Every structure is written in C-alpha cells, then in structure tokens.
Length: 129
Image (tube, rainbow, N blue to C red):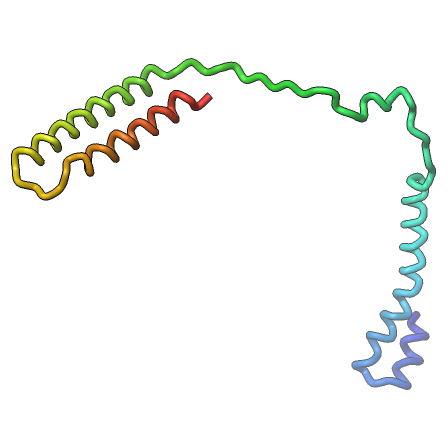
C-alpha cells in the first residue's frame, strides 16, 4: 500500500491523494464485507416446509376479555349527591331572585342548562361500565 501511495504522490496533487488511496483500500474491504454477508444470510435461504400440525395454531379461534366490574365508589356518589343538592339550591335561588326582582330574563334560561348538564354528568357516571 505504501508503494502505491508513493507512486501516486508523484503524479497527483496532495488533495487528490487521500481519495484515490481510500478507493483502492475500500475495494478489498468491500469484498470481505460481501463474503461476511453471504456467510451470515446463507442459513436463511434454506426453505423448511411448515409442520401441518402447527396449522391450527396459526389462527385465533376466539378471544374473550372479561373485566371484573368495579364497585361504585361511595365517595364519588357522595360528591354527586352533594353536587345535585347545590344545583337544586342554586336553581331555587335563581328562581326566587328572578321573581322577586324585576329581571327581563326568564329563570329557566339559567335553570334548564344547569339541570341538563348535571343530568348528563350523572348519566355518564352511572353508564360508565
């Protein structure tokens, strides 16, 4: 290799020397790598026929997943009951305030959405399973 590089230094500039020397050195490395890859992948080229007894295991016949039902949390139900009590109290206050004072809005514009969203939240909690 040194003789090759020395002969190149007579004919080429210094900047061209490394590329040419590396190309020459890579040629032998490429052949070694190819030999290694061929040796590594040769076992995969042999075809083995599948065992007919294993054919039944290739397909899934049935899957059943059963989750045990969680018991309802007493704390969550207590929070839900307290929330409903506060909503009913708020609706009563709003209705009394709108009738006692002159307000140009019907109290149901405040009460109806409160009851609707509270009902939806309660329904989601009870139907969560």
